[in-house]
Amino acid sequence: MDNIIRVTLGLLLVILIASAGVFSYQVFVDRAYRESLTSTYSYTCTITTDSPLANVTLFIPVPADPAGNSPVVAGFSARAITGIPGDWETPLFDTGKATLVKITAPAITLPPGTGPSQPATITMSADLKSGTVIDTRDPVNASALFRPVEEIMQIPCPAGSVKAGNPVCYRYATSLYADYEAAPGASVNISATLSGRNSWKIFEPASNEYESAVTVRMSGPHHGWSTMTGTLSEGIGTYTTRPVTA
Image (tube, rainbow, N blue to C red; front, side):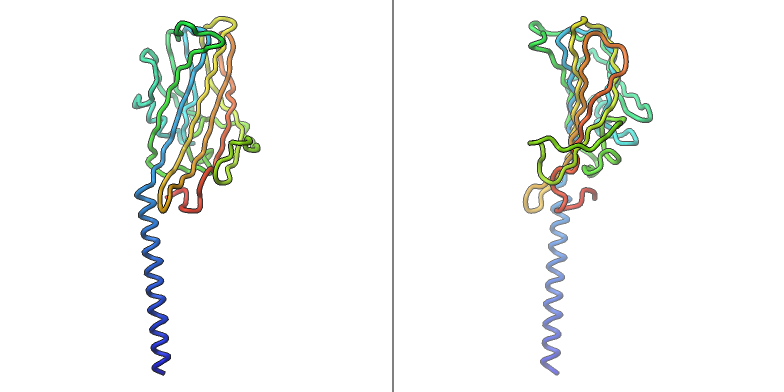
């Protein structure tokens, strides 16, 4: 009987030590994750032209979640987006389906030497922290994206673009309004990119993210809406170390 009691107590002690070890490990992992976690949006918008533009009015989609909010929206409101020329006005408009920045400028003048072989580019950009963990596996419904998201269709991820994990890729369309005067042969390209990324370190660095880009090319003077072609890659990176939300 004494042997049975000793064996039982020994087993209970082993179980207690193992449980304490598992608990300590879980506490360590959770603390390391939370203390190292950062969630960041990186945004750029470029306007490229080979000819001067006059009387410019643009409505360009700004990445926003379905409710119309995002750090990029807040960045425009706080004038925290770099690269905006000093004579541009950039108020925001929420249409209910999309958040747009209205750019107005009397003219976009170009430096000497600009032409078809050497167009000029204006780049607006920002790296902005998110106050919450970014949903990188369903940005269409849960995170910032160029909206409205229309005609979305899953496509094979382009060869060579697949990163870690098992990303899913899409093509979609959104809208841009442009009104400006230009020479008949002028070429104007407007594009924007966005990435949302969570990164952390427990035993080694890990991250997950999504990426989206929209672009449109216009020729000559323009007065109206145009369709921008969009791409989206979601579910890039690691999803086994920690969940994507916390």
